[in-house]
Length: 181
Image (tube, rainbow, N blue to C red; front, side):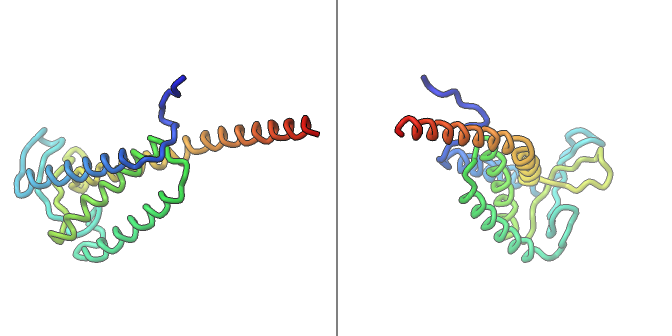
């Protein structure tokens, strides 16, 4: 009988992660190219497209220090991939979160490397003083939230199931050992 796939199933192939990262980077760069230098009213006083060149991070943190953000992004990606390599309880949920974070980081990194700034365009006028952002920023934020959900809610359930399997296996082995004697 074929095992039903769900959000908790673990798989080892990275092709899904790579596909998600490529999609995030593609859509991020495409939307940046299409909106760069333009302002479009989508829903006045709620959400609009406004072309902004951001040399800093969110809320212009480290403004005019793009090189620091480039170095930090590379260090983060190296650490994140290293963690992913050693972390063995990867589920589809985990992979989606991981891929959104990596795709978002790469999308903004490409802008910083080749342009010296990040192209932002989504303006939430409904929220005063909220920074203008882009698709990569959305993916980063959603990915971080999903990552937190995974480690707070899903991983403990996976570990609980793993511990139960280990206990069953030990009992089974103990029974087999007793029967042999």
